[in-house]
Image 1: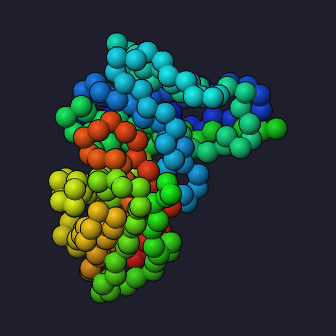
Image 2: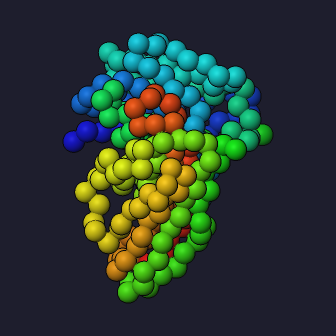
Amino acid sequence: SQKIEQNSEALNIQEGKTATLTCNYTNYSPAYLQWYRQDPGRGPVFLLLIRENEKEKRKERLKVTFDTTLKQSLFHITASQPADSATYLCARSRADSWGKLQFGAGTQVVVTP
Amino acid sequence: DTEVTQTPKHLVMGMTNKKSLKCEQHMGHRAMYWYKQKAKKPPELMFVYSYEKLSINESVPSRFSPECPNSSLLNLHLHALQPEDSALYLCASSLDADRRTEAFFGQGTRLTVV
């Protein structure tokens, strides 16, 4: 089956440290990978998008990398803050069916002061 | 206005009831989506509307019936649901279904079927 997998265990991290989340996928290589943040009982909020021909993308304290050889994307939150505590979802889509986003189950991040 | 608004926020319905979920956006987006999310699971795509036409139906049971009355509104009509249909139903929109832009999600409707 076609899978997109994220660490199911929560990531507990101390304030100020860097959180690194992993997203691995099987079968087809996506044209685009997206990362979303989801708080309990709320809809996902878009954070970053990276294309297959891009190695790295940054936005403020966030950085995402995309390695098509390893079939993996890494998501980094630098100088983490308690307000960063949430579940982070990765999602992929093909170039010919952009509307069909396939989400990973997400990794919960808990940042403690 | 960068919001996708969903109503109601919570809904409890019996298995013989008929209800509707509503979604509205005023960003000029031409693609709108319904997702279903169970606890601790990823959102799963149900339907995609592109330019007010249904373009993707992910083999969703007929007890879920989508409707797109105009480019700003998306409804999901519910009839004869089962308790296992209880979930968070998310509406999303994007510029269109072909351009490579992000999706904006609503807050969701928490549906409980009793």
